[in-house]
Image (tube, rainbow, N blue to C red; front, top):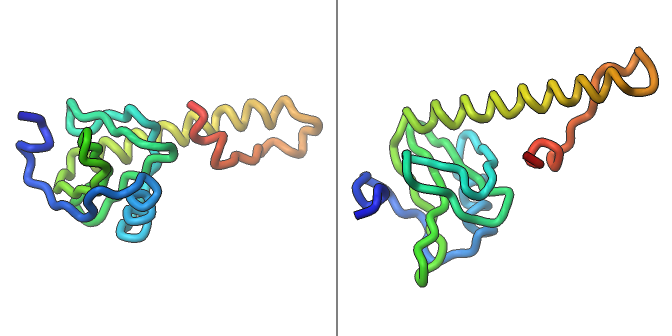
Amino acid sequence: MSCIEQLKYRLYLERTSFKEARDFIEKNSEEVYYVDPGYRIFKDYYIIGVPPVALGVRGEEVLFTYVKPCHGTFVMGIDSPEEIARLRESEARKIKETLKEGQKKGSAGEGAETKRAIISFGDLYKK
């Protein structure tokens, strides 16, 4: 029995596309985080999808995509304050690393007056 089957979950969309799942999560979440495919959630479950893969937070519920072989992509929600805290911590760490890289690029730039680097969406998710 998989970890997901043991947790009490809510099913929001069934047999949908990755794009429709991402749109649903973006529209129905208070906070949205983008992770790379392979991001680990609930200890032994790995997120599968087409980047950027959206994870949503709504209250104490995590909204995410679940791919069931031969059945398609589903959007599920599970109450997990622990997983939300881990997701927020991971996102904060990613932003700090990106800002440090941006500062290094900005200080090595043309003039001393432009120490602040512009960070694009694509740069944020390269790693």
